[in-house]
Image 1: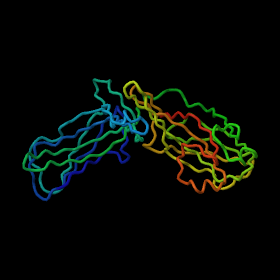
Image 2: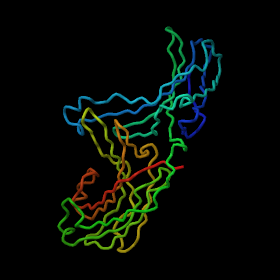
Image 3: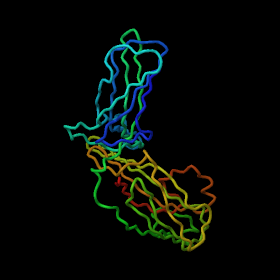
Image 4: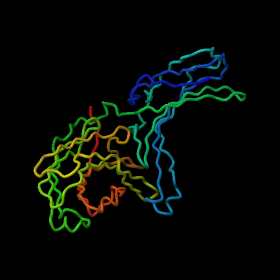
Length: 316
């Protein structure tokens, strides 16, 4: 005997004003008795603090109590019997109650210390002598179009330049003396359905370039008592140049934010999720070959970088 939960949409994306629809599929070789079949939908913000970022005392907290968003159960079939073969039971459940607009729906997000998740579970209760059966599937919540900001994205890009004088960390002696200059522009307000775009030009470099990468970082902050614990982690690295780059050649920047690992920039009371984009230039050096697994957040002698705040938004 098996139970499966199939949603009406293959991409599993729903909006708070919509109904979650699907069907419970039960396969059994013989008829069975049950005490009811229920569908439960739950949504929550799950927070955790790791000892490395919070300190020794705070690390005892571990996982913080989740922030509930949604918790609702309906009965789709009352107690009775299910015949042998395949049985499909349709269901429909409003995500947001029509008479209540108090629920704050955050978009689905899977981060390092913050996770916003929505689950639908089908349960078949069979009493004490038989094991109850259940199936769970995650569905994805995106903001309602009516709740999105009316303002359009700013078409302006931020102009940046990277030289030996803009770096706050030690550089290789040949980089410090010989110098380099990289200029460009990049968008710092982007739609989640569109790219992070821009362009970059290497004007001069005394040391050959090994690679140029665009790195996307998430900045997760959690309120822990009277303290705010913040941790930055790498989401995605996109290489736009491999090997030395010809001077005065314009390179395009085109990066698609990964689904589920990003969400609209969120500033809530107990937590916040923000993002940064970094242009990272790696120069050819024997030291870099010995430190291939270096932490991308840590500046190195053979690296030059420029980090800018990035606002991600959901657009209509």
